[in-house]
Amino acid sequence: MQIFIILSLGIIITLISSKIFSVPPQKAIALFIWHTFFSFVYAWYVGKFGGDANYYYDEAQNGNYSFGFSTTFIIFISTFFYEFANLSFLSMGILFGIFGIIGLLAFDASLRCVIKDAPKKIKLLATIIVFMPSVSFWSSGLGKDTIAFTAINLILWASLNLNKRKLILIFGIISLFLVRPHMAVLLLLAFSPVILMTKNLKFSLRIIYFFILVITTILIVPVALEITDFKQNLTLENVTDYLEDRQEYNWKDWDGGIDISSMSPPIQIFTYLFRPLPFEAHNIFALLVSLENVFLMYLFVMGLFSKFNGRRVSVNPHLYSSFFWLYSITALILLSMTTANFGISARQKWMFLPFLIVLFIFYIAERKKK
Image (cartoon, rainbow, N blue to C red; front, side, top):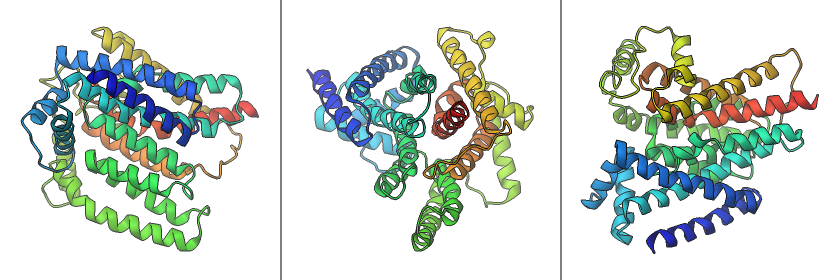
């Protein structure tokens, strides 16, 4: 009965969201069914192999109402849901998955926005992307990744029409800050100069937004540093030492760990984005991830080729490509230098991949139209 009520709530929220994001209801329901299937898979996987979701649920059962950021925030809202409805572990996961479907619909809407007049093959490619298993798996259960995925895609969708979606943008940034403060800092740092230089907004609004972003960034930087365990003075030497320490973290004693300390930065980036490859897969789950990595590699190659093939690509006036590139590249470099585990990289790269994918699909579509 509990699961039936949550699924019914999910359908209602999906239909409401489909109107907000202008996604056809039939496709929205199909995405909901597909995404919810992975909520069941995620609950089974965590129950069998373990995961942070077990810890969150145990803390919720203990009535931990402490408010904070990152892990503490997930425990806080999990406790609220548990105390309110005495949810089972599976029901809690499905409920969190409803947040994920909102992000998935926003992702689909963002892709549709940049391929309105594209050939059918490009539209099919975009549909394949939103139905990728990893997109739904990591955003379908109890955890920070679900909220972060939704926040990122709300920010992405809002930035495609910033004049009309300011509140969605603010909500997305706040949501990201609650679960991944360091990523919110990166995003604001990337957004500030772009807002100042954009011509799509009135000059007075640009100045106001810029100062708001700068002040907000200054306020949240200390929180982000504390969450990431950076407790030293912010100097180049201390940052370098911190990055070296992170390269040794969580690879020796964890499944999927890999030593990145001896790799060059380009190899670290390639490893973070596209490994494991099929020949490195050690089980069925790693094989599925590796196949998706091959698909992502194809998408990157085609997207970059379409952008730099010598033809000038027309600019979508609502596509803040400078912001997309600046945030994505900065996030990619920093995460690739500090993540020594395939499992962690497989889920955390979706905190910036939607921006790059929208760009690549746009470039590919423009080239095909020409």
